[in-house]
Amino acid sequence: MPFVLALDQGTTSSRAMVFDRGGAIRGSAQREFEPRYPRPGWVEHDPEEIWATQTGVIADALQRAGAGPGEVAAIGIANQRETTLVWDRTSGEPVHPAIVWQDRRTSAMCDRLRADGLEPLYRDRTGLVLDPYFSGTKLAWILENVAGARERAEAGELAFGTVDSWLLWRLTEGRVHATDATNASRTLLFDLGRGDWDEALLEPLGVPRAMLPQVRPTSGVFGEASAASPVAGVPIAAMVGDQQGALFGQLCTAPGLAKNTYGTGCFLLTPIGTSARRSEHRLLTTVAWRRSGTTEYAFEGSVFVGGAVVQWLRDGLGLIRRSEDVEALAASVPDSGGVFLVPAFVGLGAPHWDPYARGAIVGITRGTSAGHLARAALEGIAFQVADLLDAMRRDAGGEIRELRVDGGAARDDTLLRFQADVLGMPVVRPGVVETTALGAAYMAGLATGYWRDVAELRGNWKAERTFEPTLAPEAAARLRERWSDAVERARGWARREEDGA
Image 1: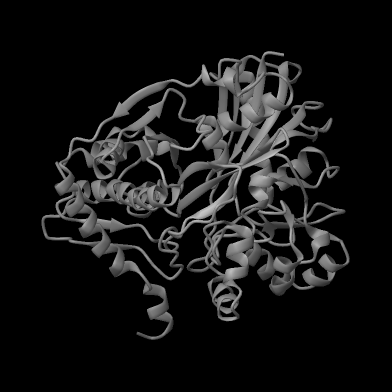
Image 2: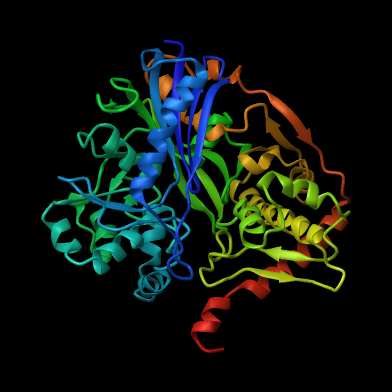
């Protein structure tokens, strides 16, 4: 069987990709869907739309690869993490729209948990911080706000899962309710040291253990796709959070390497080995993957709005017709004209962790043009990543030699040139930038013997282009200082509004 199929379920689209033994994409398909914003700071998905778009692209990708289900050795699933779903175990019907990782509705709940002195417990055991980003408080909100949900959950009638669990459940027609260690580690409910759900973490949030999925290794057979699916009988052999998938797809498997994914958000990870060390600079400790009986960990920094700022320029402001048009618009001016755009539309992630921050544009003059706004938007992405890398360098305790990049916005040369300048280090774009799906494919292929080992995979990774810094360090430092000034103006904005300030 010559192929591995990867399902890449993201925040704004669902994709399927067919990979061959050399790690090349032989066929792919993508369908976008619209997040919903019922209130300011709230972000939701329709779970049935996630399922429909994800299964809809499978047949298209196989057709474009000229492959049938019988030629697929395994399926790997990569997914948007933290997005929270609850459904009826019998009917499979969701009890509420999926609450997306960007959603901020549980900010006050996190404040209460912090006021109760629980942040050290959650940070020590989970490697995370108390922030609405993570699944635990989203799940607690559903149990508190959906009529009858708590009683049904306590009776064992409801199932919780992140998107990986939802897709697995549907692909196996409800036979398997499981997740993997990477996704479990993003819930606030998972003890990194014990590698399992923790009653001390469940109890303050009122989450019944009966509704949680079984935690399994990232690379391993979870079950077979049902006869009703487009890939009947094919083993589902990996499930991995999208960012950990990209880390593995970039073959960043040893300390000293780091990858950043420029997707809806930006996610910077570096592996730290088999010890779950805690960050001293407000980064997260997360499971990188669990395979071959070993759990490995990573430091992570998360930017909530990365490429999504380009979608806002397109859909919100109408400055461009297509997302890929942003590079030409940004390149129409030599610099941002002193404009800084802080895209804190749903708060700020690491290292600030401010759910009350909101977007800000500063430095506008009468001469500010659409080109300046486009360039400031791209530079705002790069500045956020630079803030993360600074913290990561301090935490990792060793030099990070280069930054490997992937994701849709990684195709933008203007962005990557500026990224190299503000980091003062090489930025390397691989030949295959869809490394999230590639990592899921690699994990599935390793579990089924399609690939022998990681050493075999290393021959597949090739750099397409390296961007070297050209800006003087002093000039880069001045830009970073002005960016920090802009961030301070965005911080706490929603709280001031709530307080009537």
